[in-house]
Structure formats: structure tokens, C-alpha cells
Amino acid sequence: MIRSIAYFGTYDPDYPRNAVLLAGLREHGVEVHEFRAPLPALSAADMTGACGTARMAIGVAAAHARLVAQHRPCLRVDAVVVGYPGHFLVPAGRLVAAWRRARLVFDPLVSLFDTFADDRALVRRGGVKATAIRAVDEVAFGLPDLVLADTWSHGSYYQEEFGLARGRVAVVPVGALPEPRARGSARRLAPDEPLTVLQYGKWSPLHGADVVLAAAERLRADPVRFVLVGEGQLSRPLRATLAARRLTNVCWLGRLPARELRAHTLAADVCLGVFGLSEKAARVIPNKVYDALACGRPVITADSDGAREWLRDGESAVLTPAGDAAALADALRRLLDADVRARLGEAGLALYRRAFTPAAVAARLLAALEDS
Image (cartoon, rainbow, N blue to C red):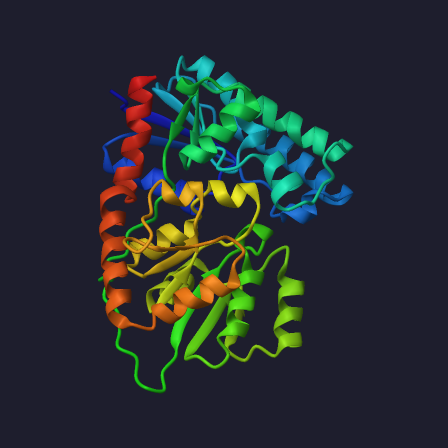
């Protein structure tokens, strides 16, 4: 039985993946000891430049020093979990786990190489930077006893890319923190009231915000209002598209704190997932989808291998072809019907309560540790 876990590394405790696991483990009565040293706040694009790389290297070294200072020699734990982001700290985690005679778990959430070279295309495949990033991945995925993946599609990718045996990969969905105000109902729109459609993200290609803007253009004459929240890699071209196409049915709010983001999710009539065409986009179910389910909001996201592991088209969500703005626009027209939205919201909330609460997510990690 797993009684005590050390959560270790440069992870962000407020990031949804970590917040859900930490809360869930404690709900199961697991004693969680946190050992954390944050990294510099750098975007993915920043980290590919010379200055950003230098700042990150200094930050990683400083993080190791701070974690050494937190070391508690007599502490007994059953497992050491290197949380996200934590790729650079896995070797240190391996040493800590060996010292404590515990199993090492790595929760990567993503492959750095996949993110930087493929999905975001920030470094050139085969170049020096890509080779270095790939080396970090090889070490980070090679050392743990157990690697977590958010979907089977992602887990299969880790197995193939890094030569992991099936028994070293456990699928643990991201999940979301609960929302006590969630009801799964749908408001009736007044004749002159638009459907409010929300998408948020850090605007990497994975999100497919360009597809959302193209759908908004198709829906100019329909009672639909889009709200985009966040900033990131593609903010500038997305804003340029908004201005060039004069999309008055789109409201750009920029970056918001988590509490306001949850409020916007609750207030939305429909929440959007991801629509990008990258292989990574097809493997994942993003935070925003789980958050919408937790709030009882109907969800539209791309029809992908990852999404189909948990979502059923027309039942718990609406799945449309990735990159297809016309299909997204058609789906939103169907969701002008409040009864359809209510049915999807109720089914999505039931799915969340069954499989994606902190307790349900942590139970999958604990079961994997018991079986390993």
C-alpha cells in the first residue's frame, strides 16, 4: 500500500496536472511531501534563444542547489514523483529515489522534442538545439521506474520513441479540480442574445485557434459570440487575423488568472478544445476540455485518437475533424439548441465525476504503483 510520496522537482503546484494529482493523493490519505524549486518564467520561444537557454541553465543549477537544501535524510517514502515541468530534474530524482529505496515516477505531460521540434516548430529537426532537446528527453524518459501518460495514444508514443516497456507506462488522465457551482444545465437564449463560445490557451499551433477564427468568420450572420483567453506563441498573427477580417463577433481577453478563467468557463454556453493538425494534438486531451467537463459545459473538440479514448461524439462531447472550420461552425449551429447543450453538459459532468476528479485521477496513479 502506498502511504507516503515525495513530490519532487521544478513542478508548478498550481498547474492543473499537478494540482489535481496533489489534491487526489491527499484525498486518498497519502502523505505527500513537497520538495520544489521553481525555474525561471520563460516561454517556449524564449528557451530556444541564447539568453533564454543561459537563464534556464542557471535556473536548473540553482534548482538543484535549493532541492539539496531541502533534503530530509530520515524521511521514508514509497515513491518519488517528478512533476511537470521536470524533465531536467529526473536524474536528481533518480538519486533521491535510490537514497530512499523508493520507486521513481516521472510525469512528463509532454515530450520536449515533440513540443519544440514538431508541434511548435521552434527548432529545426536535426539541428544542434533539437539534438540537445532530444538528449534531455532520452535521459528523462529512460531513468524512471514508471512514466505517466495522459492518454493511451500519448503512452504509445512514449513507448515507441523512447523504447519503454509497456509495464513502465501508466495512463493517468489530467482531470480537473471540482467546481461546486457546476450543474450541467443550459440557459435559454433570448431572441437577441448570442451563444457564448469560449476557447483559451497559450496559442501554440496545437490549439487550432486559427480554425476557430475561420469558424467565426463563417458565423458572422449567426447569433454566436466567441471569447478567446490567453497569450502565447501565435498571439500576434491571431490578432492580425482578427483585425484584417474585422471579426466583430470575437472578443480577445488576453491572459487571465485561473479564478477568472474558471468563471468564464462557467459562464460560457459552449467550450472549445483543440483543433490543430499536429500529431501531438491528436494524442492529447487538453486541460481546457477537462475543465469544461468539470463545469458541466458542453464541449467541442477535434475528433482524434486521444479524444476518443474518453469522449463519445454526440454523447459526452461533439467531435469535429481537426482543422475543419466548416465542421466546427456547423457544430456550433446545432448547439444553438438549449436542449442539445443541456444533454451534452449533463453527460460531460457525469463523465467528469466518474473518471476525472482528483480522487479518480490519483486512484489510477496509486493502482499503477501497486501493480509495478
